[in-house]
Image 1 (tube, rainbow, N blue to C red):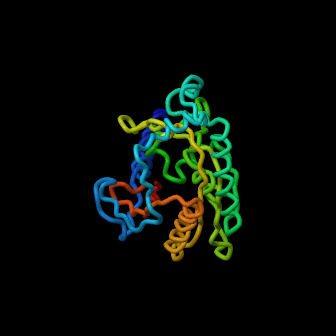
Image 2: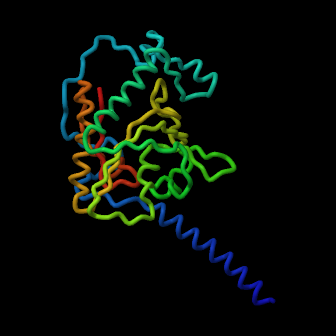
Image 3: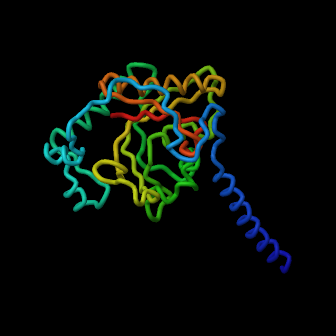
Length: 262
């Protein structure tokens, strides 16, 4: 009996140690590609190219003023029904939002992408599968009393569609696009500019996801980025492409391109 009690105690201790090791391993970021510029933060990002000419506007208005003047954004009522960092799109604002993500989906699905409409809640295993847990737990919304989290991006459910599966190499690459609402607690954003529709708790996004072999991943990543750039070109929005530095790259990323739009 004494031996059994000792074994139970050791099993509990072992479980705690194993969980600690697992948490430490899951907290190690991906290794940046050798082509990623070295740096400590976003000031070290490298501009690769520009498309279009940024507009020159005399005495420009902030977008939150324009939205309220046109009666297409309502921050005050959003704050009343939800709180800070939410926006109500109304009238032509709601129509424009819907038109943009439908347009993106229509263009992408006319190419090689298969559309996915995923759940907006996933379990903790899916969150770990794309690196959100445990690193970004404070930046996510957890449904109390459940194992559900509101998704921060459609990348999470779409990528995890294939978790624990062996994919036939002949069927790769797999190209998906997905619209979803995205939910982020932005716990680490204190002190940053949060006016208007910047750093919202909820926003809409169309995500592009590719599953491919390591040998073709660089080319697929480049083509995916070009597909995103094409949308900005079709909308005639000037932008620049930047290579994110090691100090600004995503936790799970091997390499990141950023498209910054004027």
